[in-house]
Image 1 (spheres, rainbow, N blue to C red):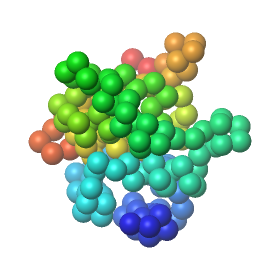
Image 2: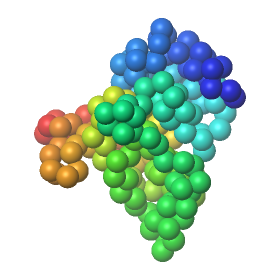
Image 3: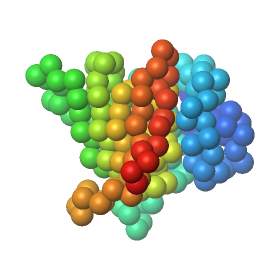
Length: 170
């Protein structure tokens, strides 16, 4: 699907006027089974990080934060390295929308991911990506250099989709 069509259909699905509003509204859909199913029906292939495409083109802060996202080929290579010894867990530092975690999930669905990300703007996308793929995950919005956690969540696997639970210790 071409980016413009993907964006238009995604905005409509999440009742958003623009990509900023989409990001702000996504947390209200984290545990909405119907919305997650509609998203799956829209994109058909969860091996692709569709929301990354939207965020990278419309919302990435390349100037101040130097944000750019991991190319799929690099994420696939890193996933193969990370899971080569039959590992079942991955730590995805600077997780962004979850490119590395999604590629690990493509190789092995029963992984546990620890996702660390600084930018609050991409967190709603990261968490939705994990929940829609039913990935068991611990997610931290944090400064990894200072080891300071601002917020954290767990994505608890369900029958089809993960449930997002905020950590009360933040």
